[in-house]
Image 1 (cartoon, helix red, strand yellow):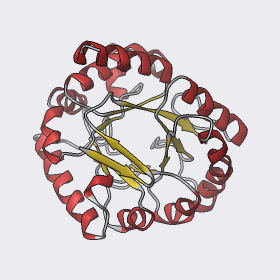
Image 2 (tube, helix red, strand yellow):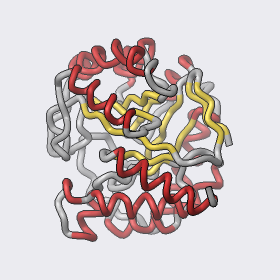
Image 3 (cartoon, rainbow, N blue to C red):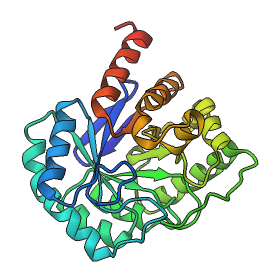
Length: 280
């Protein structure tokens, strides 16, 4: 299986990729965000030193108890990082840059200035973002969710979450391809914690292999999620052990990418688990 994003071509099976989270905002649920571009770049550099394969930058928190920022503000937060990224990238082994945004106006503005992958948490309600990625040969991460971002959907009930995901990704992949985005440029994200209950999330971990029928890389956003807090009864900053457990569950079932805050711990876990699985 091949994944393409601009000049990058990644072939699976291989050791899973680790995506480090850099929040260019001041309201991250883990308290690790910053509005200082230099500090954000320093975070990205440390994550690359710790072994991150992808850096995921986001200027707006996905928290539903915070007001949305304007398109202009989101763009203004991203621009300084994008301007400096080529210098940072050149010092490491061709890492990918993911831009975590769902607004088409933002994507249209920032993609000409960089970014290999758009991490779209909107659930792709229309084809606009896929078309923009196709125009720039960028990758597109399609995350399952219901309703508009920044609006709580904690009431949503799924009779069969895996059947829901199956139908959702079938439709969204067809939509993305209809506007010229190659299938090889698509990554799937089941959207842990987004419009899902505790048992929905646990079922996704348990039955993740069902998504492999799409023959696309599956990203698991495992880091410090609410479902970990629900199971362990611990606050966000005490969920790294639970995060590693979710990585182990995901690797056992074939996930290809993990999105995390604690990159060093995740990279070590992935390398160890890969050595055990593959005998290397």
